[in-house]
Each structure stands twice: as C-alpha cells, then as structure tokens.
Image (cartoon, rainbow, N blue to C red; front, side):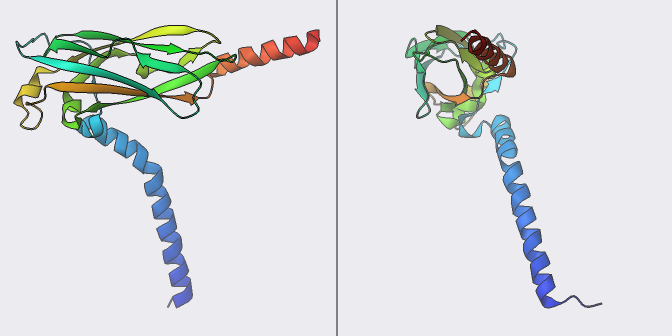
Length: 194
C-alpha cells in the first residue's frame, strides 16, 4: 500500500510541528534541571547547612537587585557586599517596599556571576524559594543565608574566583488564591455597603 506523496508530506509536516511543540514545552524544565545540576548560567545549589569546613581563604560576595519592567515594588540589597571565609555561612538582607495602593505578589529569579562559581554557591534559606506578597505601603527585609562550598578551590575554572555577585530580579506574579479570595470578599462586602 503506497502512501500518496502529498499525504506523506503533510504527515511529515504534522510530525515536525508536534515534535517542535514538544521540544518547546520541555525546553524550560530541561534547561532549569541542567542549570541546577551543572551550575551553568550561575544557578546556585540548595543546602541544609554548611559543610563544617572553613578555609583561611576569603571571598567577596556582592549583592545586586533589580526588578522587571513595570513591577510596582522598590527592591534593593541592604548591603552591597561582604567578605567571608570560604565555607563560612553568610547572612544578607534585601529590602522590598510596595509604594502602591494595591496588594502585589512577586517572585525572585536569581543567578550568580561568574557562572562557574554557581555550582559552589549554596543557599541554606532564601526569600527566593517562595512567592512574596506585600500589602500596600508594606516594607520588608528578606534574608538569604548562604555559603561558598570549599570544593571551589579544587575546580580548575572556579578556584581563582575572588568575588561572586549574587543577583536577584523580582517580577510580578498572580496573587495566591487565598489572597485573591480575601480581596474578592472585601470588594463584595464594600459593594454591598454602598
């Protein structure tokens, strides 16, 4: 049974479109997984705590904060840098302020520069692990607890790193369901009073 050349071409094109769609759908999760495993693109690790090993060598950590275009918050690091011994736990704070008259939810994305240091920059606790919700006029200081893994000195590319920049970008997300439900209930109550 021979397939008509036109039908064969159409089937091949449909197959290509389905394949491309599947690859586009899988590319973001695959890229995120790849970056977490390899530290590529400055992706950091998550740890329960430090390794306990602290070296005599120090490293300077710089902090950077930005926000997506049109995002209503003000966002910045409280301190712009600190010097730690490699393996020592550090604690830094970022400040967020919602100057608007509405509740805004945000999520932070992050990276580390130089990229090869990302595999050795371990976060113990971070505001970036969850969404943040700020009420109108609310100002908060958000902590990030971290350390630089002593194994960095064994890496042929990362061992000469003298400073690491931890950079966050905040962007707006949809309000969590419970926050949105509370706002909807409040709006309904105000509407029935008027």
